[in-house]
Amino acid sequence: MCFLGDLEPRVPGMARYTTPIQYKGNVNHLLSLFNSSSPWFSFSITRNLRLKELYYISSTVESIKMDLLHSNGVLIIQHLQRDYRAYQDFLNFMSHVGDPRNIFSIYFPLWFQLNQVVGTKMIWVAVIGDWFNLIFKWILFGHRPYWWVQETMIYPNQSSPCLEQFPITCETGPGSPSGHAMGSSCVWYVMVTAALSYTVRWKDKSAVALHRLTWSFLWSIFWLIQISVCISRVFIATHFPHQVFLGVFAGILVAEAFEHTPAIQTASLRMYIKTNLFLFIFALGFYLVLKLLDIDLLWSVPKAKKWCANPDWINIDTTPFAGLVRNLGALFGLGLGINSEMFTTSCKGKNSCKRSFRILCIAASLATLQLYNFIKIPTHTEYLFYILSFCKSAAMPLTVVALVPYCVHSLMRTTEKKLN
Image 1 (cartoon, rainbow, N blue to C red):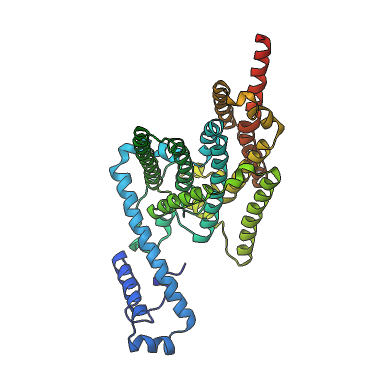
Image 2: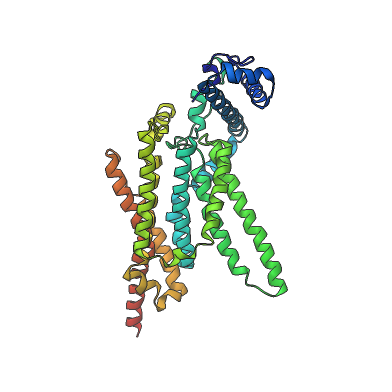
C-alpha cells in the first residue's frame, strides 16, 4: 500500500502528514488538484510528473480515503467497547448467532423437515453466498480493526488506539465483506420470505390484515437480528462498520437471486458434483493466477498471527480455504442425500406427511449434529485438516436428509407392524 507519507512533496501542498487532520487536508488538496483545470496543474502533468508518479498519487488518494474510513470506524468501535460493555455477553451471543456454521447445524435441520424446498434453498444460498464472500474478500483486501490500528501510519508517534480483543476476534481472513453479516442476512432472508409465502395466499379481509401485521413483524425481527449481528462484529473489533453493512446487503442480493432459481430443487447428483468442481476450480485458479502475479491472497493470515492478543485464539477454521472446503462439503452432502435411495424411501413415502415423523426427524437431527461438534479435527497437517473438514461437512446434511429420516421411517414401520 502506498501512503502519502512515503512520497516526496512534488506537488505544492503535498507535504508529509503527521496527524489525521493534516492527513485529511492533504486528501482534499489532492482532490482539488485532480478536479482543477488550472494552467499550473496541466503544465505539471505534461512536463514535470511522470506516469508512475500520477499512479502513485491516485493510489495514495484512494489509500487515504480508506484510512479515513477505517479511522472513523475505530472511533465507533471504541465508543461501543467503552459505553456498551454491559452488553458484552449479549453481543458475543449475537456474534455466535450470525456464525455461518449455524446454518448447517441448526437452521437447516429445522427447515428441511418442515419444508424440503426451503431447506434445500437454504443450503444453496449459504454455500454460494459464502463462496462470493470469499471471492469478494480476495478482491477487496479488507483489513480488520484489530491489526489495522497496529500497522497504520495515520496516528502520530505510535499513539495507536487501544482496541480490546476477545476469543472470537482473531479471524484470519480478510475483513470485507463480513462473512457473519452476509451469512446471517441471506439465511434469515430465506426464512422470512418462506414464512410469508404461507400467509400471502390468504384471501379474506381479516386474513389480509393479519398478513400485513405478520409481514411487519417478521421483517422487523429480520432487521433487529441483522443490526445486532453487525454491532456485535464491530464491538469485538473484527470488522469495521462499512464491512458489516456491505455483508448484509450482499447476502440479501444472493438470497433474492435464489428466489428465482427453481432448478436447484430438481438438481441431480451430477449437477451437484459439477457445481462443486466449478466453485473449487474457479477459487483455486483465481488464487494461483494471482499468486503467479506475486499477489498473496493469504496476506491476512500472518497479520492475524502477529497482532492477535492471544495465540490460542487463532483458529485454522477461519482461514479462507477452510470456509471454502466446509461449504463444498455441505453442498456435496446435500446432493448425495437428496439423490439417495434412503431419502426416496423415507421422505417421499407415506410417513413423510405425518407430524410425528417430522418432529422425530427434527429432534434426532439436531441431537445428532450436536454430537458432530465433539469431533475435533487434527490441525497439525493442513491438507489432512481440509480433507477431514470436507468429510465432516458432507456428513452433516447427509445425516439430516437421508440417514436420520430413514432410521425414523424404519422405526415407525417396525412399530406399526407390531401394533398390527
